[in-house]
Length: 452
Image 1 (cartoon, rainbow, N blue to C red):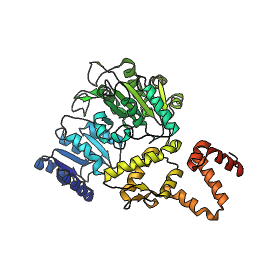
Image 2 (cartoon, helix red, strand yellow; image 1 turned 180 degrees about the vertical axis):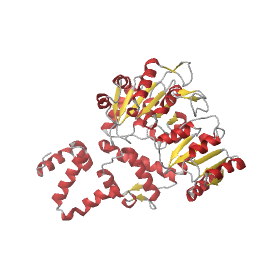
Image 3 (cartoon, rainbow, N blue to C red; image 1 turned 90 degrees about the vertical axis):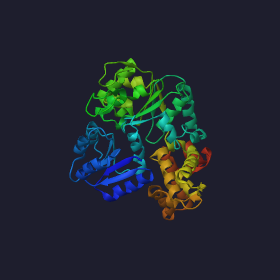
Image 4 (cartoon, helix red, strand yellow; image 1 turned 45 degrees about the vertical axis):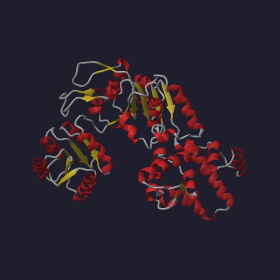
């Protein structure tokens, strides 16, 4: 039975973690200070240490330095300071996690740390073998997603482009708002490509401190810098033969952009601390939620790198632009949430459908997924009702429902205007949102003399 020592001065939080990890088959010891923690390390010989960075009697960095590299250490910080986390990892910490977090979120990191053959950081996403076990919510990547058939013209057009570019080795730049499904699209391209049986490695460029980027890209040798306690395979080498997905690539520092460009041009990399060149064969798919052309114009992104990444571009529609797919997505996430939470919710009430179809969905598909999962958890009956939806979704409906004594014509006029605004005045989409024909919508706009 693996032993975990938790060093945390918040006793209630520590006991909650202890109960959770004990149920998962670990033997857990608690300590509320650095001094007592050092004592328990000698007495109980833990296999892993989970420690807060802010202890009443000792700085967490000092504690890590005193422990050395024999025991994997995961750092908890409520301050989410990247620089502090980097310093902790330089001193030998395995990984760090920012509070607040749930026990489930850290469990995988603990399991990874206890695997002595693996050294990783929180900045590199899992490769395809790891992610396949966690794709219940990923459309088009897991078994559930493969059975989802979308109906909107926007999604069908996207699928056509994916089918065209997937068999090639062209670099693809995916552009879309947060939560719209950029990584799902990247996986779909990979799965339909000739590289489908090779690794898919995802790297979140928006979360990599510039000090660690070279190591994450190219790997390093043991002892090449402070904190390099073992050899590390970088993302390029791990993805060789397959696909490397660079998410939020626009967030890379200028120096990191130069390093990336050189690797793409030469198709060779060197691990930090090594003079040996390693040839890599990777297909690059990158993603951004910002306009990289504007970033190039401002001098924040290299133009030569932009053209390397953008041999073919894909624009991912936001959920409001593909509302015809909303029922398909909603029932998919309902099924997945039922399985995950052990529920058997059958449907959504008519009032919920009305709210879904008039909400503006700023968080896109990810927001829909989270809202349905939350609603399933809170629902006791057979169908989801408005009471279990977040308050920000109900507010617009409540305002409309009260209607302040509006006449029927005034209410209809208000509904038309709201639908037009939510679809950026696209009349075809507004008609679908209102569940009327395009001709009927034009007639009503003319009837109310709306200046559209």
